[in-house]
Every structure is written in structure tokens, then in C-alpha cells.
Image 1 (spheres, rainbow, N blue to C red):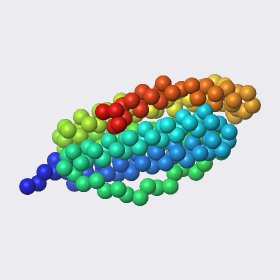
Image 2: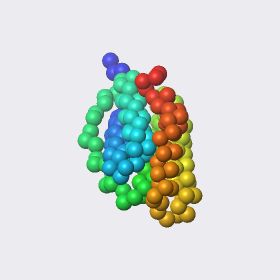
Image 3: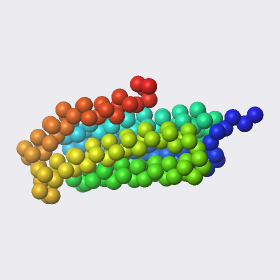
Image 4: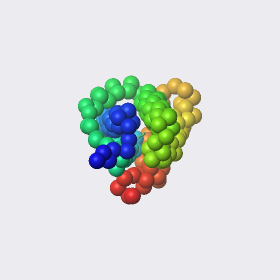
Length: 184
Ligand code: FEO
């Protein structure tokens, strides 16, 4: 008896997303280490916390594949992005990575629609909402950065304050973390 309720193509693209989420976790991890090395402990902790959220996303995709009778195939995770040159580049790269990830999820939604795979379509709605939140979180940091810097680089007391403010932003990170697989 075949208990698999997802198509071969859907299984493949969902497994690809498992790797995408793992890759995003690696990026936040690498950038968190970079931020710590630059003395930005507020940013570093923020990014480390976020890395865990990405890993939770990975687990959610794995869980969905398994629940639908599919097979999880853990693949090699690509190398994270190179270290950024500065804080501006760090935030811009994170924003781009989030937008790229949203687009990958929209592709899966399109396939779910085409295949009338409503279970997967429904599963992905959580991620649509989550990605709006994730893009906004980084976009807000970028906006704040640009406001302080006027588009250039920041340093000295401005950088110190930016980093210090980030250390107080647990609530925003908690929103996504509360929705993670561990709390369900
Ligand atoms: Fe798992 Fe930041 O998206």
C-alpha cells in the first residue's frame, strides 16, 4: 500500500527547502560569529537566536514531508555567505537572503496549487506569514541603520547604541520563536 500523499516533484522541492532553511541557519550563525568578532554582541546574540529559528523552519519542512508519507533526504548544506565588509552589508545580505527564501517558498506554493495538494498548500500558509515577519525584521534594522547613518557607515557611539538597542529586541525574535516546532 502506498501511503505517500505528496508527488515526487513536491517531495523533491520540499527537501530542497529543508536544505534552504539549513543554509539560512548557517548564514545567521556565520554572521553572528562575525558580529561577535567585531565587538557587536547585541547583533551577535540576535543573529544566533535567529539561526535557531531557521533550524526550526527546517524541522517543520522535514516534519511535513514525513507526515505526508514522503522521504526526507538530508543534503549537503552550501557554504554560508562570505563575511560582510561592514554592518550595512551584513544587514543588506540578510535582507536579500530572506527575500530569496520567500521566493523559494512561493515556488512551492505555486506547485501545491498546480497539483491541488491542499495539505501542503495549507502547511505553507504559516510560512507566508512568517516570511513577511522575517523580511520586516531585517528591513526595520536596515531602515534604522540608514536613518542613523544617512546611507554611509556608522561607527563610534552610533554603532554602540545600535548594537545596544539590538540586545533589547528579544520580544521581536520571540514572536517567531514562539511559533517554532518546539512550542507546538
Ligand atoms: Fe526560514 Fe528566515 O526564513
